[in-house]
Length: 100
Image (cartoon, rainbow, N blue to C red; front, side, top):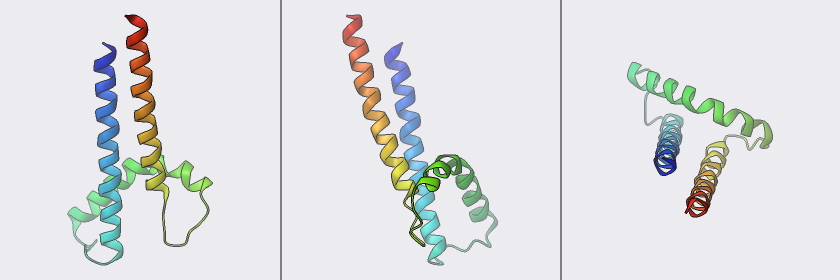
């Protein structure tokens, strides 16, 4: 039971990391005019990814200083997720050892 819960949480956190990476790459492509935002599909994809990640970035953007055009909040969120995944592994392994 505990292992299956860990597997689901780990999978969801890994998917979230990939969503953040895709959103960051697409934002760079838009910033360098490689992708045109006049395309309806691109605009809706960027909007959906922004809505998925905005709640994660908002508290971190309040704390981080302004670096001009450089946004480090996706990197900070990924580092927090990796740390959370490692803590989950530690917690699950201790729980499984304690239960026998």
